[in-house]
Image (cartoon, rainbow over all chains, first blue to last red; front, side, top):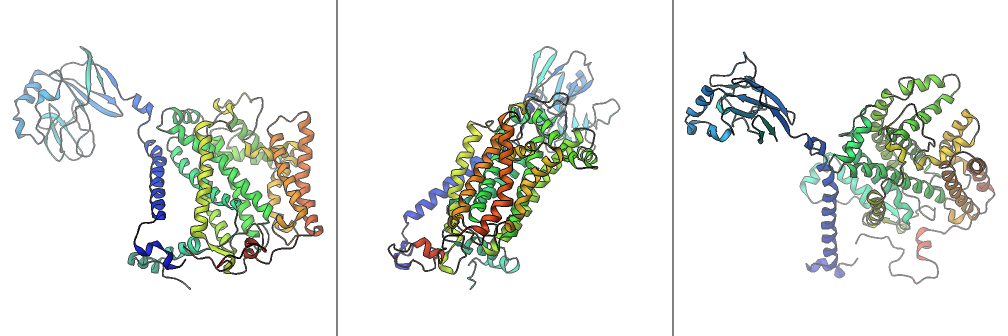
Length: 181
Length: 418
């Protein structure tokens, strides 16, 4: 090809530039559309999502008793709190907490605390569910991995964890049953 | 004359130490290719792309699949129903196997027609046959994985072929099964090998390409390139031609995946494997049918198995069976007709393989099987000696540009990149 016939030399966009750009753009969109199903296949499947609620009967849980249930493969701590524990959780100066949150905002009924039992630091499961477990100095939970201490509202009080134990979405389906998720 | 690969300093720095860019430029960009390749030359790269699609979709399927006899079928159904786009991945993989074989079979027949197996491309051809055998093994083991009725009984029949080997046959079959029937150990090892073999295929494909690039592609005229006027650079001329062919091929493939995903499959494989009930009519996937027909055509267990494997292995000997020095069937007036007879013969074998071995199919299957071997063992050597080929053109460019046609300015000169 002689250079004089080459429109590139003049710096003008050519029909070929247009074709190249549209072809590449179409190819990119097509490749994205082809790759997306494969990426999305790595997301939770429908049967996994179908198992994402857990029903819990609260009736047999005595005051002061803590129960662990499984929700989405993770432990959920259900604490039937005694009036003293509720009192303890509500006396705290909220603004002095690392992750300020009043106890009232973390429960639907004061005697029932429901939190995801996964430490917000690096995902260990805090101690405190069984009798005889170390509960830490605030009477809540104590994470043995890196020493995070939670109070009776599941809020972080000491240690490296950045946030309170997560309160999952749940609803009271009757007076004594909840559905988590 | 090696042109500087790139102006980019980083590229030059890397290339000086690891000459990947020089290599790619040499093998994909400049790589001189006959200027007269037809669309029949698209199917090699199409098969290569199908291999990539199969590995890619297969890796994602393996993330959701469970290789256990009690769980495999359900895990495949879970892929179909629950995994996001799982149905699409599985249909891509399932139909991909068929389209991989379509591309490969056309690629092989193209080689047969244009004599691509002849000197100096014998090893290139033989590596291709190795790839075909590996593909068949991989496809067979992949078909077992869903653990449906056809999976189970196909596996039973095919592994039992080895019991035909005298004296040690039964022991070999027990070894293949890891038990006394097709069972969980069989499924486990088939899954392992089904994952491994595609990467072995990739390795042989690399050798296939090294052998190809040593002498370059054959061409529809079957004559050697005699100089730069017979060649054009691979890029952009054949990259664009390959891409256009790919788009058409993928269109057909996508039509199957989306509108007729089970057209080539067998409904019996949507029934979970039952070791106590054999389906009334066992058929392999379509790409095995000609070989299955050959197996059943011979009324002796051992000889049937020998004939079936021989039908593939005979391709290894083809470069030496064909005595003709002329490659392209375009200049072989007799061979040309027998090539098409062989194509028809293979179609007939496919048809016979799909039908139960009774009535007319027995006779037709035997005639077609006879013809297959007669073609390769008798006709090909004989025609090679007896046939009088047409005169070959003096060069590719002379033939392409025509004798009496208008002389184009610059025609016959080496083609350059635009």
